[in-house]
Length: 402
Image (cartoon, rainbow, N blue to C red; front, top):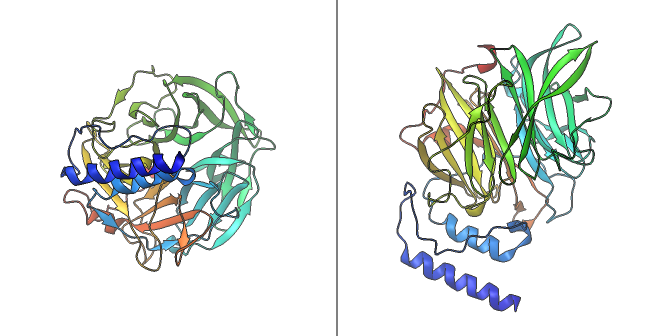
């Protein structure tokens, strides 16, 4: 029965593709290709995987990886790598670092060649984000926070070029009646309040905003706000320039709302971020922002249903600019079913002079052989060259210093 079902879907996909000739800026589509929703990801479902590849073939903007990290320490075919973050080394940009979660065991630190620098066995760390200039014991540090699913809590680290130093003696626990599974995570720095925050979301769609402060030389956390979506969310990013929180509700759309702790929870859906857009096929996952200065920039989101990435303008009404995909460059394989992603506008030495996008790769292969998951590195200039309206380079705007 399973083979017959798979054959049926494959035939349906081929017939559908033969009948469609829509561009990647189309805003509506007849629902003829099967929408593969549900708990299983494509790594676990061959029909879902075939469907995603068929949909991906319609997207014409293509980039390739420039580097990749070594695989996480997990079994081949296991869904383990999840979400990255980039630490900018102001003293030596080419020695900047990539943080990558292994949701089976902890948090890794990689250099820009993809080599493992250090690993913190912090548990089932799912999503990670960081901010700069957090004051701790009379020092200014880069602080990273992450969701940890064993404890259903928040963990925190000091980030250096050599290590990830735990800042909490034990995870800061979430209320299980509100956050059922500490899943998504992002950080926010409020200029208005000169205060750092984390947002944690659960699989039940609830989000809590957590104030992060120093108390007696240690990190202190306090829940200050609860936000509710109607279904599961994970990918989130806060725009520190404009005080906006973006949330990807996996099976619906991308939402925007105020990131301030005393704001109401009124939210707006981004136009073309739902299934009325031919290129939005669920699930919606990782989100991040490329800052270009003067409140301009780009919001990037991973779209798992067609193994692609959607770009919206950061400013105004978040105009949709189109999707792109990441294919093999012959020595490094392409990218499929991305969970988390991260991007920076800062020049990171000669390999990434215009900035860097890092994405989780759900199907990592080497010479056609399946390997454990890893993270791929893409030169921002390669992405910008696929769009007429996107900046090839930014003015190296250090948003955390403004």
